[in-house]
Image (cartoon, rainbow, N blue to C red; front, side, top):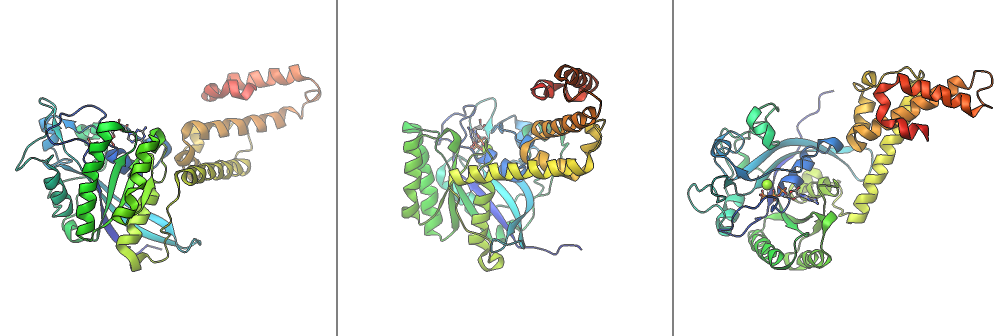
Length: 371
Ligand code: GTP
Ligand code: MG
């Protein structure tokens, strides 16, 4: 049955990585792009950690950037449980990252009308009209030049849609750099609060946090009457939860029944481990039913949904290892039927070596299978 339309919203991810007039330095970003990327492409092996804002002129002018200082990360529909039960609420997200792009020749911002790295201007453009006719979605710098990924058109009229804001603060920073980052974030938060916008704070790079910086961000909760999510794009932790929370605040009655809980970082890590265990077990029980011969080839499985589901959560390497271990179990059961194998470990080892010699596709797992 075709699924009907669902509530939609635009989510703007905010936070200036650098002071006005500051030169661009590699990897000095506070984590907005990685945060957005993880939400759009959560697959284990899909992660791309490098999204430089230092561009050549032709890149700034191409359709993904479209001469304007924000990225459209595209649209995605996510399902969230209703009242914690089996029923799901679908929500259509359109994700926009407000940033500043720098010229590769000068390491200074591309200037169009006014200084794009001035904080006031940054806040005004993120909270005002966010139209950009002809703009398309961005995935990574590589796909920018080759247009190989299926781009999505930036929707016109998006400025009039329900909009939520995620203000990003990087807790791996310390000292003066962190002080000025917090000052910039507070200006954004003050504006959002004053203008009654729906917003939430996302701590980024929690995996490499400084404890003092972490505490300082939590202290902002009361002042700005908001919530704080501790996230890690590297670990894929608490990101979808932050978007779920902002959707619940922006769409309110339209999505009544979805959770507005804020998992701690430890809970998020625990949930991810549980999810990985579940994916592994479900793939193992699929293999038990479906793969009964040790001659089965990996490439035959790769097209199956069960294989893809497991790969998405635990990655290809781990999924293939589960498959290799299952084949070994099937192989062992077969050779145990031969007279004398059970009692003779050397003979068993010979069969194992024969098996491994034949299965060059599983060569990287040979050592762990021998154990
Ligand atoms: P600008 O758009 O230039 O303002 O930067 P940004 O805020 O988009 O930052 P970006 O996502 O590009 O990340 C900057 C750097 O931080 C990159 O080198 C990332 O790999 C790193 N990074 C981002 N998220 C995480 C994370 O969760 N953990 C760790 N350890 N590093 C991260
Ligand atoms: Mg960025």
